[in-house]
Each structure stands twice: as structure tokens, then as C-alpha cells.
View 1 (cartoon, rainbow, N blue to C red):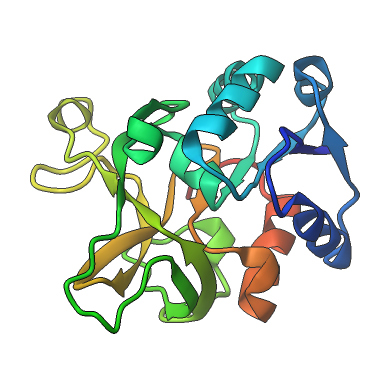
View 2 (view 1 turned 90 degrees about the horizontal axis):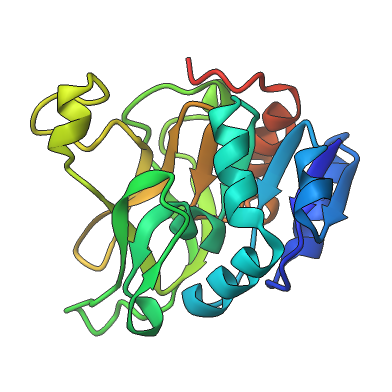
Length: 223
């Protein structure tokens, strides 16, 4: 069973329809026990970090996500889902998140008046490392974004000591980045059986649908 976590966040119906379009049979789940029965989990959503985390915790989904990743169960996080798998968000005065990946979510602060917040529309994504879910996706493909906050992964000395990253690099979690507001931001992240996109694959045409289709058959291995 493919479970889509329903925690009263926006945009989950369009994710369900896109997964059905590529051959999946997703089910919305609203409690932790139903989510635990799933073979793979999609964690989508549009909303504010504070409210989303309150809803996640109320349903026990934060614990389910930790259990799923620890067990090697494939997990796909989308948009606010990607932001919330990191340590903390600056939104809503500061919110502790699910803490599956090291880093902080920060608000875009453009200096160019032509660059608006939210960052909305198509943007090119570059892949600094390979991943099975990106196997047939052209490096530099365009994806659709809608977000005011972005992830700043930790440059984690602890990860270096444990072999998860090379010195002077992010903690081994960035699989894609895009450019906005005067710099690069993380567009794709992951570790182990967790794969997360800041963009909306369900709104990103063939390139996004290919990621969803590959997720249906992914075994959770990152290489």
C-alpha cells in the first residue's frame, strides 16, 4: 500500500491524482497505525511550518516517518514536506521539525526587486550527484516551485566524522539545487530511503511524473 499522509495540509489531492496517473494506487491515511501498514509513504503538503508540525504530531506521523526511514521504507517528501524533514524552520517564529536531515529552513530575502516572494513558477534544477529517482531526468530540467522558504542544509562536521560527507561539503544530502534570490538553494535532498523535493513533481510535467513513477518501484536504496 502506498500511503499519502493526510494531516490537513493543502495540495494532497493533486499528488494523489498524479500518482494514479503514473500507475500507482495511493490511499490517504489519517492515523499512525494506517501509515505503518504502508509499503511506501508520500509526505506532501502546502502550508505553514507551525500548523503542519502540530498536525503531524497530533497524528503521530512524525514518529512514523522516523520509523519508516530507519526501516528503509521508501519515503517521498514534497514542498512543505521537504522542509519539515529537516531540523528546524524559521517560519512562525521558529519551529522544531521532524529532524531526519540536518539543516534549517530560512525565508528568501531577495535584494533584486524583480525577484518576488514566494518564488513561484518554473526553475532549472541541477543535479550534483546521482540518484535512482533521477536516472532518466535530464540535468538542468525545469520543475515547478511555489515557496517562500528554502532549506539550508547543515555543513555537518559530525557527518564528516561518520563518513556521510566529505570535509567542506554539505552533510551528504543535496541531490539537486536551483538558483533564486541571488544564490543557489536546495531543490532536492535525501538520505537512505528518504527523497525530498522542494518543487511539486505533480505539477512539473513529464520530468516530475517520471520521479513519481520511479518512486513506485524504488527499493529505497540511494545508489
